[in-house]
Every structure is written in structure tokens, then in C-alpha cells.
Amino acid sequence: MLLLGGRPAGPRPGWPLAAPLAAFAAWSIVSALAAARPLESLVSAKSLLSLAAFWVVLWALPDARAARRFAAGLLAALALVSAFAIVQVAACPAPDGTPALWRVVRGCTRARGFFSIYMTLAGVLVLVLVTALPALGRGRPWAVPAWLLGLAALGLTYARGAWVGFAAGVATVVLAGRRWALGLFALGVLLGALVLVPGVRDRLGTIGSFTDDSTRERMAMLDAGLRMARDRPLTGVGPGQVKHAYPDYAGPEAVRRSTSHLHDTPLQILAERGVPGLAAWLWLWVAFFAGAVAALRRIPADGERALALGAIAAVAAFLVAGLFEYNFGDTEVLMLACAVMALPFVAERG
Image (cartoon, rainbow, N blue to C red; front, top):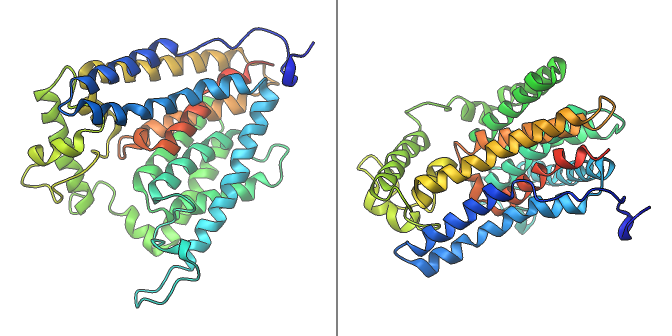
């Protein structure tokens, strides 16, 4: 029998990850209340609501077939956004001030699509591309060109941390799924794009270089964030309060004297929420990977194992990219990451 809305009758999906999510949310509120500006910090903590996307998707998708359609819809939507982003960069106004073809291409030297900043597009693309990779080319002929469009747009974001995250996601697919040919194809296409486009190639060459201003800036942020955590190890400075604390902690080597985040998710969590907050955040990911891998093993060989594997690899890519950018604080990226987290648990429903 079917429930209303076409949901197959059967076991309810329950509340996986409830304990670590609740612990992280609770300590975030404690940190906000202990901050120098508690009301402002509590308002900043509203981003915790994005974490509920995990349960929304978990309960909204009735079975593995619905999860597969959901993932395909994400890829199709991102292909359209990617096509626009590529045109956006190609039609970017010239340095001499030539008018743009339309207003939405302003700030277009780095692909951003319909998002406010290129980092958001890069974060979303990494999640969708890695999720789709294990099942690429299986039964959907349009998926390969759509995926390649997304990869091209990812290159044009010039977001080095996202590139590293994508490579980590591909490596996870290869190592966990033994899909060597598919992984080498993905990395080969990405490296080809990075090498062939001069601007992208130059950006690639600055990864890890201490002569690069942004690398030196991140080192200054690392030092400042650790000193914030040393001074307030229990509750941190409070969610959303790094922008107020940073001028007091920025060293003489810092290029900028102000910032709203530290370009590193674990560091940001530590500085904002202290050691207990970081411990709860890490607990969330350990619990996710343990539950998701267990779900993957329960899926039969003819089931949606590729979808579950892609989701696990996408979350790994999200975490690696977060070492270079505070993607956990980007609402669009975080909501999509939480939605993707639900897919392994849905995929095991037959």
C-alpha cells in the first residue's frame, strides 16, 4: 500500500545524525550567549537552520528511484547555470570599460552564474559534479555533456580550494569504488582545462606558493584564529563575531585588517565556538561517514550504490574544500551539502 503522496509504506526514516547535530547546535547557542555581542551572535547562529535540509530531503524522498531523480535534477539545473556562467565570463566587459551586454555580467572576471560570488558557484559545482560522477553515462546520454559544462564552469571560478576539493572527491570515488578509468577521466579533463586556459593555468601555479598574497593572508588568518581559540578555548568569540575580533588579532603580516571569516572551516568553528564546538562538529562528520558507509554496504549490487558512493565522495570534497574556504558558512553550499548527505540513507530503501 501507499501512503498519501505516493510514499511506499514501510519503516520511517528516523532521525540519523540527530545527536551530533543537536550537540553542535546547542553549543553554538551557548557560544553565542557567551559572546561580547550575544544578540548579534544569536542572529548569526540562525544559519543552523540550514542543517535541517538533511532531514527535509531524507523525509521528502521516498526511495532510491526518487533520490536518483533528485540527483539528476541537480545536475541538469547546474548545467544550465554553468552554461550561463561560461557565457558570463566570455562576455565580460573589457578593461577599457566597454559596457556589458547585460547588467548581470558585472563582476564577471570569475564565473559566478546567478550567485552573488564565485565561491558559492564553485562550492555548489563541486558537490553536484562529484555526486554525479560514479553514475556518469549510465542511462542518461545528456549527463556527460552536462557534467563537462559544470567542470568548465568550475575551472572558470578560479577557486583553487574548490579544485583541490574536487580532486579529493574524485580520489574518494576511485579508492572506494575502484573506478580507476572514471577517476582518471575526470582528473584528466580537469587538468586539461586548467592547463589549456592561460588565466586558469596561472592561478593553478600559485597553489601553495608563499609569494601569493592570498596564501600569505591565509597564514595570517591561521595565526589569528589560533590565538582567538587560545584566549577563549571553551566558547570561542561567538558565531559571527570573528569580524569584530580579527582587527585585535591580525598580525603585522596580515594584508587585510578586517575579515568576516578565516577562510578555513575547522579554524572558523574553533575560533567561534571553542574546542567543544569543534568536537561536536567533527562528531557530526564521523557519524555521517560511519552511517553512510554502512548504508552503502547494505545496498545490493544492482541498487543505487553509485548514488550513495557519489554522495559520500561529495561530502569528502566539501570538507577538503573547507580547509581553504569557510564553505560551511555559505548558506547555499551548506544547504546543498546537507541535502546530499541524505542520499546514501535514501538510496538503501530499495
